[in-house]
Length: 120
Image (spheres, rainbow, N blue to C red):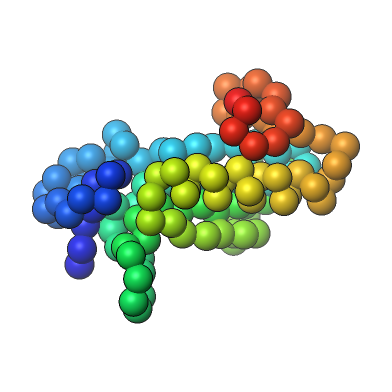
């Protein structure tokens, strides 16, 4: 197994384990249209084949109006090599899901409304 810090540099499994809880979240967005989008640093390479290590992941899950996840079966997901790619990918998924319900915007975890993209 290959472990990487958030900058993409190889680290030991002990260092990965110590960092995982405190450094995991990259972004989280609740959408009034019924989705929760979460982007995290995995630190563990999820690349199965050739290419750069995929160490970040965005997943979207269905949720109710209070933001409670109603199913852990993801609606959409993607993986990334860098934190910049992960942040951009997070907002692309938010934008796509918001487009399906153009009457609402996104709400970040602290409750501030954002229309789309990294304008939180």
